[in-house]
Length: 120
Image (tube, rainbow, N blue to C red; front, side, top):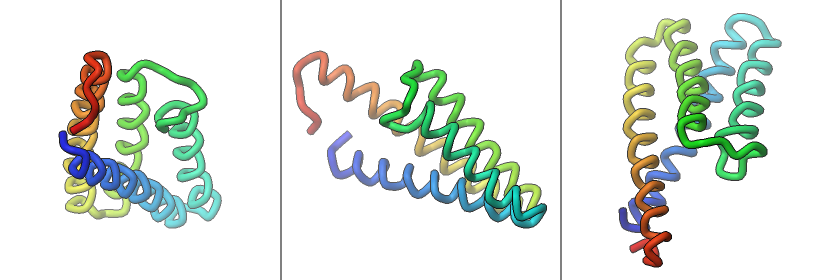
């Protein structure tokens, strides 16, 4: 993937992460103020420990994908609980596409790095 497309996909990934936190907060506040704070906070902690680029614990890619699926899945479930099925489905589809592209892009970057070739 070219550098501009890589940067666009990474920016979209960050926006989806923020959207997930917003969905969790929206749902949480609709249930109880503590959940409005606690649900996104829990997601931030789990993400920071295991899924962030500079995560505290480096786990295999499969584990990172599981963590992302849990956080994004919880956000999708939150949107469904808020009776926003269209938004939930759209969010889930876009996140899957973005994560798939990012995963293939990162794997290609690893292959290029091992071959001594920089990103185009």
